[in-house]
Length: 360
Image (cartoon, rainbow, N blue to C red):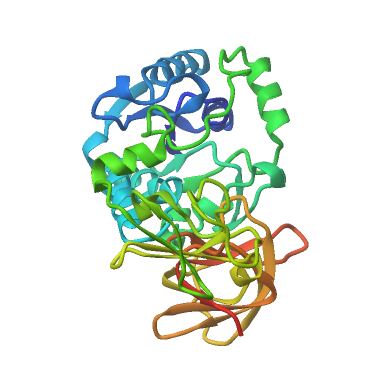
């Protein structure tokens, strides 16, 4: 096939491109320039959108022996990922920008352009498996990225290739070293690539604007402190709350909810974080077939969170998961991803954006 390899400059995407070329595909490498000003994005291991990464991707393409290009998608990235990130926090939700980037950039904008240019598929270095169009967890559970790929539909998956899903991260580095790829020992990127200094609170304050509000106790309504912006908090947070007085019972407090309209952060004891029902909207049936009957499955509610056995029910508004065991720190804006346990590895059934939660 004629394949476009998205090359971030890291070891995973380099090895994925090498695997595709060695499998006999006609591979072209492309690096996505996502920053309006690359100098403001993170450097070294702290990002994935830097000038250093672009150079690393080009060198890897040279070693593999494939053509290489840079596509400028800065404006699209800013609109679909950065602006969305800010708007979600302003609305009191906690977004996942990596998930949005996969959905809007890598498998919408890039895939659309690739198809228009005559490519058959896009190959990336994500740790997940594709088995005849069915998305599964990676064999390396610690590096599994199926959660952030669950927003993809069957048509997008039919034009995707994830060659690394069957090996571990350690094996990826070994494969890179065998091929003389300079990124073999390059540290993984982490955190949010478009926040240069890692100061998410400062980034949001600059764009949303600081606004003083109250931090109140869920049981008594007592004001326990104040904040400069509700966007600096997320459900489940315990540290850095800025409480000026302890709660009446003296126990630690956690963020339970954020109300942008009143600019109020509500806190309470840990047990009040527990929920057994999770509502989500904008569902994507990753498996390709919408289920009209309740489904026994497991759900994951954060990118690196634990899973919970649940019954998934399709509703008029989206999906509702009835958890067998309570979950804590469930934040609106994150993704609910449902998996079907399978002998060959969990199958991604569906995903949706968490809109609310409750306790039976």
